[in-house]
Image (cartoon, rainbow, N blue to C red; front, side, top):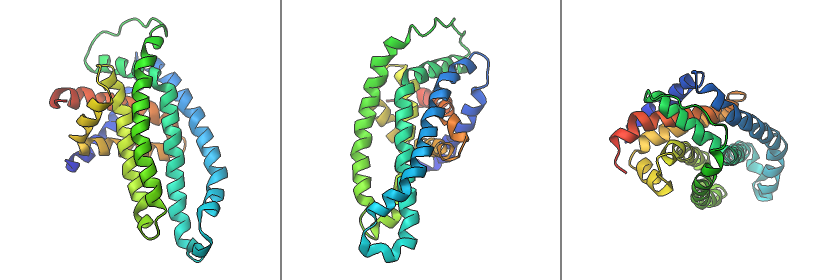
Length: 244
């Protein structure tokens, strides 16, 4: 139920509280560095491209409405750029995020922290994580194209920014819940079914990650916070109360 959205949102703060803890901090470093690099590129790219894109896509016969359409198109292009770069960052960091989720789950369950054996385990994670990422990208592309067309239909596109926000929250929930679930052998079809049965929690959590992503400087930490929060959500709710 959508009424659970605030509960889902609260797991952002639980994720923040987990990252500084002993045994977890070191696993935050690589996802954090990847996110800093990718979001720095996103900020640079958006600052150079949004004006040009709006000028290109705004029809001449609608220039008299530029004062109204410019902010709408600016929001749409901003969301497209940052969601795209978020997906790229998560694709690159996927195996490291899976390791981070594993350590956090052990911490939450009170299990002993096994000695880390370097990154020898990463090759075994690549096939699993990239397969899941490919499935998510195909799913995202389907809805992305539909929303893009919707965004350029006159009048109807006035609500497009809200549709993009909902879409972004949903995709971010799918993106981050994938890490703890993937560690338990659950893949995209299982994750999608689980999240559809818990839309409120999913959208609330995804909205929280989206908010972090939109805040300068804070967005550098959005990825590890998202992994930590989604793992906490999995341990404390999904793994116990949801039948996939």
